[in-house]
Length: 342
Image (cartoon, rainbow, N blue to C red; front, side, top):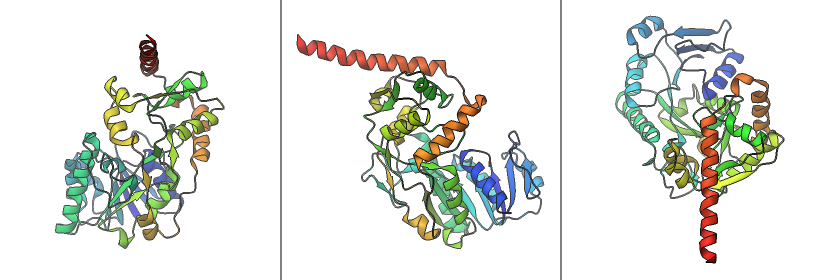
């Protein structure tokens, strides 16, 4: 296949890019070219700002593609741009939406592609819903060959996946575990969540590329493994070879006392129990199963992060915020207990 990715070097797209190149497909990446991690005779870098339509059209020339995928579109205007560029130029256009678009609060924790879309807590998710609506309109009215992909929490070797972290990423939480400090877990840690390794995601995604049965369809790609957040954090601590010192704090409290986007990221997403039904994906990609269990995948991630100092980005502000929140929660409990004894 001849494939073009808009983006192509992120958590999800990098694994797909690697597998496509290893299988001998011809891959074009259209991005600013600031992070070149691929090479080879089948790899082509198109360096441009995707919003510069004139330059992009010149770079594309008369190229046509078996598949084009946009990994960095977040609002409908960006997809209107893509439609202008690729209508008539590709046999399939894949858009990366988000499982966070599913209704919140959920009426049923079991999620499939028919679950309603509505998220009043997170603008990011509402924008993804609007993107899906635009693309399906183009499919119905213009025959634009769309496939919509809904990933959930997908991780790779470069960052430890968490529920609560600061703007610098997850390293500060890992550092707290290594130092024996208390680590925030939202709620009581018993809600169910799904982590998907990007290599598993890549196999499913490639199975949908060039698949005539995937055109006009929406497909979620996740692992079938369900874990509580307590199990997730225990697995991370185990990979770090340290005991977990957990501090459970209500998601609403975390959202109310911070400038971090925990209203969207927690109440609109991770604080909800979800179990994904991937029957549709398995019908479209016969034989697909996620192979990397979380306790195995997180050990690979932790080992990689520990071996690469550049990934260990400290976040003193978040660290201080964690200490303040944990102390406030402990003080509130002590105050209630003391008042009850009077």
